[in-house]
Image (cartoon, rainbow, N blue to C red; front, side):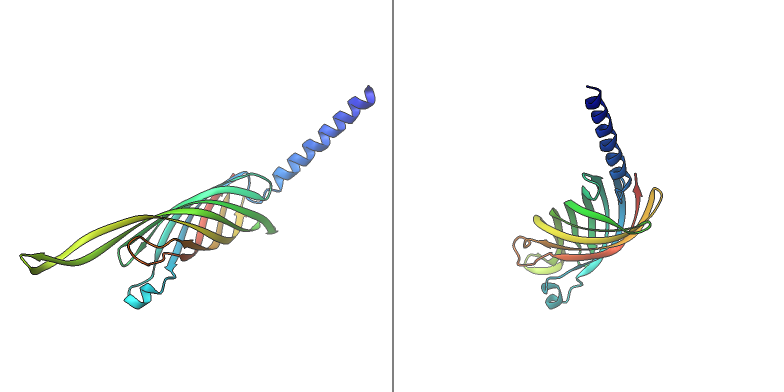
Length: 194
């Protein structure tokens, strides 16, 4: 009986030590939040043919929680704006793997699914009794399913992190048009690790 008790006590100690060690090795802590400032560019050739700018700015918030020492589940929401009065708001659910590449440097990569809200403002001639008298603004919106792959490099300073990242996102075609709003984003990030 004493041998069984000692065996259980040593086994519990080993399991607890392993658990504590795994917690310490989680490269991005138990969770993290990040503010992203990005350059966004849409890849559809429609923008080039129409002579419309296909790039703009993007700001996003992302948060992740640890599910294993190197795997994180989380999401991102942001808004991208364009010169052509396009508003792009992706809502993402992502899974990423993070590994410590060097002291305080973490490399991560992952994939996920998205559901994006898109609103396009279109100007056209406004007619009064058959004569053009100005332009009218029409806003059209749609929700698009999609997916993304991404990678990043983060430098940790205790609870603060800074980094760079890149993402490629594909979406289904925009309604009433054959415009594809697949895009890539490149940017910098500032975050908290806890």
